[in-house]
Length: 284
Image: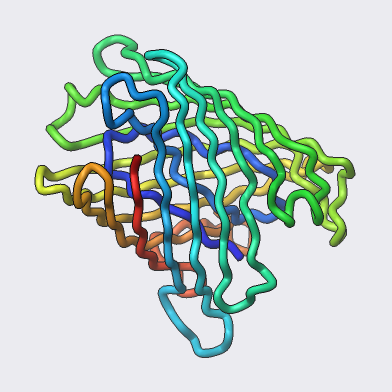
């Protein structure tokens, strides 16, 4: 099952980071928007959110290929100082068509530095982290032992933009460690990965927000075979109050190239891969 969990981009003052790198042998991989949350009260040490997202295929061809699932994700932030924090994230995906595909996601633990001004135009932050193979796909099929990743996020200083607009980009690189180079099903495991992220969001004073995100990924197997993939999403969100938020959106993902290996496969909507989703987020 390849259903992406998406917490709302505009529900809080967000910072978008590149996605952490975990093992995946397919060109199309799921991701979660990397949100750094400010504490709700001055001096508060713990913060986080719980997100529930229901997604389904945009088109139903009545041939049994329609995707339908529910994703659950939890993120906890521990504030170490004014600049540094630790973030732990995990989740569970429920396939409503094929319950045997239900699985936990891999758990990530990151140490991150809050973005700081670099000149008058940019804010730059970074993170280092590890991935724990808590999914059946990782620890059973791939024999993943763990992963390491690092990321850099760059924001345009909000003071240089119109009120409510946020523009951010991210770069990340990761290394997976497996017990064996080949998975149980014979596919060669992914050793290295990198991703590049671009995100835009605009928040209205009414609590409504519009956002869009594009992610490009590269993966290299233990046989040094490179694959590229993309994921893009568009979202309409509404923050009911400082604790509750709702969102609806669309996403599409897949290989960056068509089967002929030369033509671009990047497109906003795709009959076979597009998903629509609705999500509910509780922030604490």
